[in-house]
Image 1 (cartoon, protein in one colour):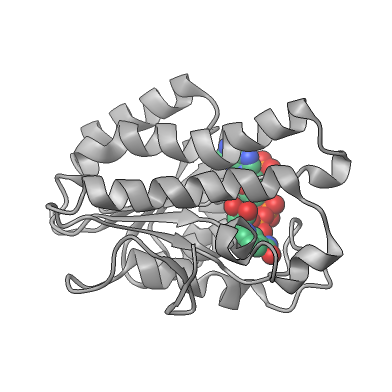
Image 2: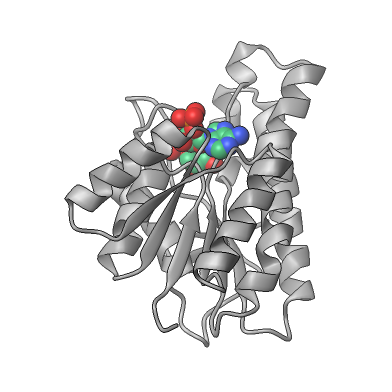
Length: 236
Ligand SMILES: NC(=O)c1ccc[n+]([C@@H]2O[C@H](COP(=O)([O-])OP(=O)(O)OC[C@H]3O[C@@H](n4cnc5c(N)ncnc54)[C@H](OP(=O)(O)O)[C@@H]3O)[C@@H](O)[C@H]2O)c1
C-alpha cells in the first residue's frame, strides 16, 4: 500500500498528541498509542474531528501483551509500518529517586521503546523508507552532563540515565540497520510546556513536536544514528 502508517506512543496528550497531529497533517495514517483504550480513543477522536486519519491503539509500552497485540493488529490491517515514534516517557525523579524509581524509569524510557521497536522491526523493514524516532532529551546526553546548565538546577539521575541508555541503543540500532533504508535517530524536543515540562517551559507544544516530525519524515539521503534538536546534531 502507498499510504504511510505511523505509530506514536504516549500520543494521548502533550508532545505525542501533537506529533500525531502534525504527521496526520502530512497525510499519514496515524495510530494513536496510549496506556488505556479510553485515552487512545479520546485522542484519536480529537484528531478525527480535525479531519485526520487517526485510529486508537491501546499500548502500554511496559506491557508485553499490549506490544504483541499491537504488532499483530498492525500486521493484519496494514502489513507494514513506516514510522515509529517512541515518545512515551516518564519523569519521576521529583518523587525522590530510589531503586524503584530507577527501575520504573528504565522500564518506560528505555525498555518500553526497546521492546516495542524489536517487535515491530519486521514491519518497519517492509516499508520502503522506515523511520524510527526515539524521543530522548538533552538530559540524556552524557557528553553534556557536566556542562549543560539544566544540570546545575536539578538532580535527575533516573531520567538522565534512562534517556542515556535510549541514546546509546539508538546509535547501536543504526549500526544494525545500516544496510537497510531504515533511519533511526534520537530527538531532543526542547523544554516544552506539557504536564512533564511544566508551565515555565520555553516552548509551545506545536514547536516541541517539530524535531520528531522532521526525523519521522527524513528523505532517503537524510541522517541516521544521531541525536537531534531542530535539525541540529547534539553530542551523545
Ligand atoms: N516536555 C519537555 O520539556 C520534554 C523535554 C525533553 C524530552 N521530553 C520527552 O518527550 C516525551 C513526551 O513528553 P511530554 O512532555 O509530552 O510529557 P507528558 O505530557 O507527560 O506525556 C507523556 C506521555 O507518555 C505516556 N506514557 C507514560 N508512560 C507510558 C507507558 N508505560 N506506556 C504508554 N504511554 C506512556 C503518558 O501517558 P499517560 O497520560 O497515561 O500518563 C503521556 O501520553 C517524553 O519521552 C519526554 O521524556 C519532554
